[in-house]
Every structure is written in C-alpha cells, then in structure tokens.
Image (cartoon, rainbow, N blue to C red; front, side, top):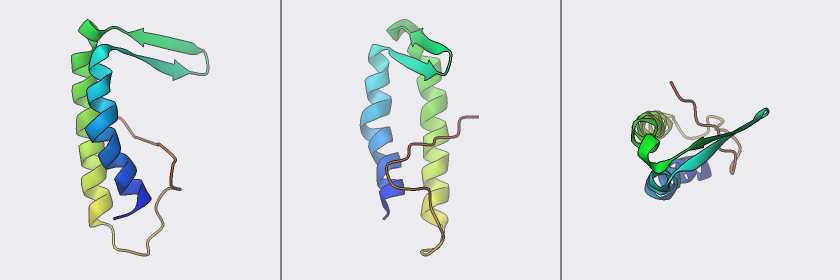
Length: 77
C-alpha cells in the first residue's frame, strides 16, 4: 500500500491499543489527561474513525494524491 495506509494500520495495531493505559490529548492550550478508566469510549471512537479512514484510503485509485507520509491527520467524528 502506501506510507499513509501503513501509518493508519500501525495506528490501529499499536497506538490505539496503547491508549488503554491512559494518554494525553495535546492542544495549543495544553494537554487533556485521559486516565485509563476514562479511555474506552474515546478508544472506541478513535478506532472507528481510523478504520473508516483506512477503508476509504484503500479504495482510492493509485496515483491520487494522499497526505504526506509521516503526517498523522486523523479526522475524528
């Protein structure tokens, strides 16, 4: 596939499961700490968004511009 789809697959395989231990959402105004007991609902939403994005990316024909490799831009709904 592409670096973009590889990045999405890596996020689903490694980053999302790692969120179960808790994580911080970084914003321009500071971080929002998400403790492990608060994480499941957010993880579910992130996983669904990444799975949708990956499915869409795999349907795109070769040669159509994809986001730059290494750029993690995950749209969450």
